[in-house]
Image: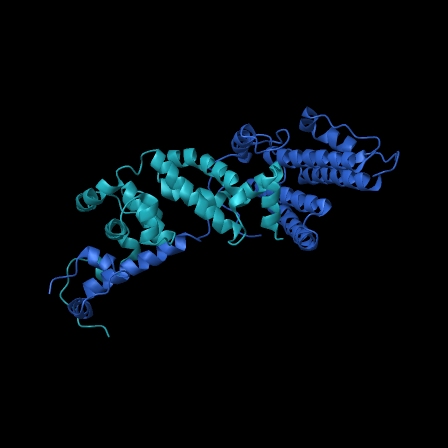
Length: 251
Length: 192
């Protein structure tokens, strides 16, 4: 009997072989090996769907997607676009220490948490003189944020006012985090980022667990989103801190 | 309410941060799907943004009965196919069925051996590549592929087998055992 046709073998998982074809397969190692090769190829193809994705440049940017969504009226509020990514971190000045980055992140966090605390504590209170020290210090070290003026409220007269301030503070925090991720690659020690990622994962797990019980709670939602944003920024920084031939697989 | 559900609800309400988080979490996977199906990197870039816009438009239709990632994956495939169709990349699918068989024979010898299945798939015709990716990678049935591409289930099978045959040739060093990589051998004794 002649060898089985290529496409007959390629259909190994679709159409059962006839008795004579099976008999040939038993005797012919070439056809048997060809059938096994097809089977292996299909297995490999199936594995592609869930394979670990190689690091590759994104095909889209959030800024362009957001612009289109905004034009369609699907996005509420003004643009909260991240600062554009700068050139490769490897070509960037390396004069900034990771301590400064950590301090800036902490300052931004203080700013946001301060806003949250003030918002919660002062709801319905006529005036509380809680100085937003974080705002001042953060503004002094993150000059890019000055593009959108930070206006610390002296008092909050309603929950909605406080919530609005909280939203604004979070947006500033988010902008600052993403700006730092895009522009400040002073930290070269990836262990710092890995430790931060592990901590952020714990924070996200805690807020996620909280959301199971109180899914609509705005504070828990804010914590979760904030931790997610910080995680995203840290991943960007970690990617910048790694040698070019390394990609993030786990930490 | 799980995290995806909460995020999706916020995204439906127009919360940009929630939308961006969804994009950030799922973009690598969506990009991989678009890259595979589009084949051409420039075309993939053109399609990706449109896919995401469609995903956000369709968010209210996600009912939570499937994982959000699975739903996104499906939407990404459908929208990519739509975009490819609009780009007339699939216009010649049916006619390519017959042409493919001749092309497989003619160009198999002169094409470079591929380093991976995805590399090799790029050397297939658009129609054959789409059928192969939908069936063997994404797990679509031939009936689903037929409905998606506007061809018959038989045509889908035919495309698939031809695509597999060409891919096997391109991938010979990766998937063929040494004994099958060579030329015709004498019939060996059964190995059972």
